[in-house]
Amino acid sequence: MSAERRMDGMMDQRVGLRIGLAGFALALGLALAAPAFATQASFASGGWGFNPAGLAGLPVGSSADPNLLAAGESGAFANLDVEFTGSTQICVLAPGSSACQAANPALTGPFSVLVSLTLNVLNESLDGSFTLMLTSLVGGLGYTPSDVVIELNPAVPAGLNTSAVPGFVWNGGFTPFVRVRDLYDAPTSIYDYIGWTVEDGTTLTFRYDVLTSLKDNTYPTFTANALPLVVPEPGAAILLGLGLAGLASYGERRGWRGRSSD
Image (cartoon, rainbow, N blue to C red):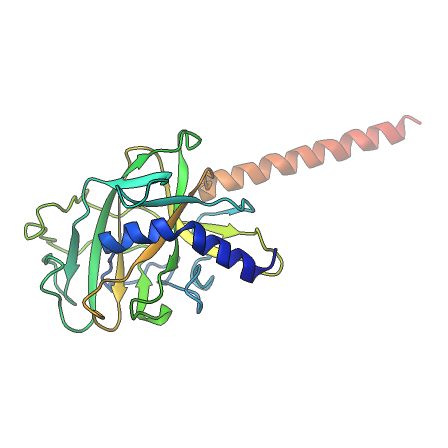
């Protein structure tokens, strides 16, 4: 399957998801100091997936599964696999501010937004931990991929005040990101997504920056998808690598002893 055909198929599959996130207006940000191990995540030029530059420091997993599961706001689409419930309010921040503002009236100029989502798993195949991902910036709302960036390891604004948005759920920090490499069209096309290791009932918080200003009185909208994949932490990946190295070494030693006995 060509990358173009797969893109068409994926976009068709996620129409309901986009509707959910559009009604929800997923907006997030705050351009504070970037972490030492990763930079801001920017969308690929086509809006689907992210530029791999700056993602190298994140825990990474790979998948060639063609069936990404749909996630979106509760009630937006009948066939969601994961729905977002609980806090669907957003905390809008002006540059340098630590006081949340509601989505309306909108700020002028660049701004940042915090988003909090609580997950309700509807698909029984997602039993236990899995990966929820941001996969694209939805076109048609006036934003280009260069207008929006995701903060991969944002700092908590000092004295953050969320009282102006009473529906916003703040757990005191941000949910760590993981990276998923979509190898379904490899080597023709490889897509990079960013997301989180979650499970049913997880409340996650993240943020992104709008580098221009609000366009058409609409906040940026993303698609989100899920995979029954658990991305290992770097330490676990190292231990796994050592284990495989041990198996290889054992196999070589056993083969040598066999040859020496002939």
